[in-house]
Image 1: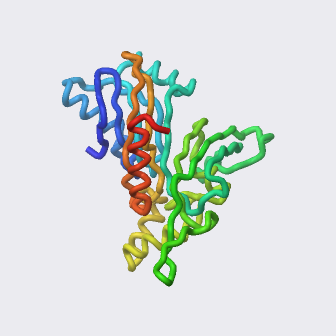
Image 2: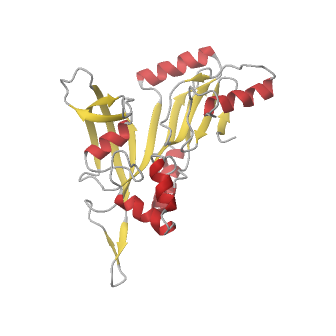
Image 3: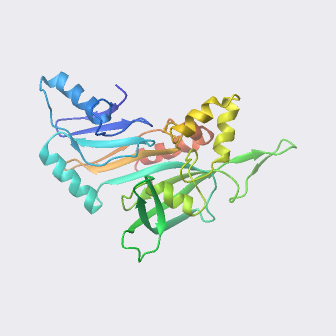
Length: 272
């Protein structure tokens, strides 16, 4: 099973979605998280079609944590938490450029283009536009090795950066669009950024370029440096606050390995 179950009880399932694997698909012959989990529960419980409520989703190229409901009551309560903001979701991302400010809030109006499956920033007056808001914090920037062998921090405009991002609205490709709009596209995102840095790094691992072709064809399904690493919610039955974290598996995070582990440890112990 591709889906990893992090926590489970009679009311909820907390799972980690691998990059490139859909949460749910209309194609009955294509595997997804929902079908995998239903098959697993069915084999355990001896029921043909066990209940599994989908509360929220992640785009197919994105890895990270998702909560599913195992009862109708749990589904209704978790949906209310998602709507009123009691459910907290945070992401880690590797950006091709660091913003000029270490912390910031982005507010844009996005319009989804149906044919291309892309979203773009548009005017507030556009009748099809939807308000999108996120906040970000830069946790670390990359360093480069100078010719004399010393380490010197790259300028904030040039260096890649590790960011923690929290979305306050749920729009199509929101993080990818908004970060690219301020000149800080995600590593591995071939739809919203040129990502020459990402292609160069992949070629360094595979000089023949075969991995680059596969990577671009799949729209970064295994390359998009975005992970829903933090999920906090109120248990629908016990009403206790529960927090779950995971470590990104995408190879682009390796350059920030210690910074990622430090952040994960901080939130595990209740830090901010």
